[in-house]
Image (cartoon, rainbow, N blue to C red; front, top):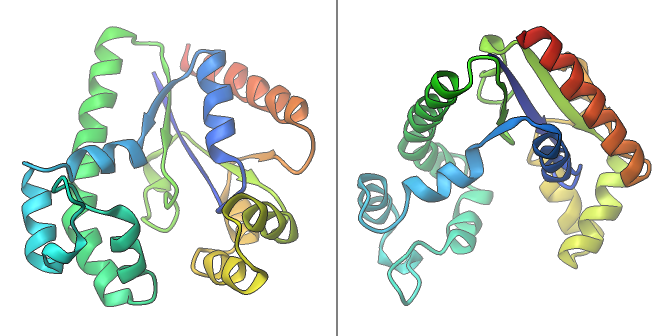
Length: 201
């Protein structure tokens, strides 16, 4: 089994690449999906988050309003750190459980750990490869404005809240350039899967 990390900047197309890798045969462990699971109503993390941020962050059905919680932490690093301290350990634990289960079922699997803040969290050190989905910042800006229907200033604020894409590219062991066509991106993803499959054998 080989475990590679997948990351990128906002609006870089990481989810698209993740889907291409899955289509090629990779097993995806999606940290965002796991993060949603571990904060559902009835979990210990849910109780801690409501205690920390109040019932005002809840939707009518009692689940956490991720958008509203995101607005709270976006411009408040101390609040973000508070939330991360609750959520991250549980995401890491469940991710490890999923990877272990895959390893038992498929010893030669290519496992892709899909984590938006992989490098920021310092998790790249334990992985065989670090795949960064790259687009230049101006392309990020254009795609983000179009995708979210926001202005240039708001788009720039979101991009600037992350590690610069050029820094992520420098720290990658594999770069998938997604500034061209979808077909070109898919070809790169398939080539990456083939390379990882060879290493896993």
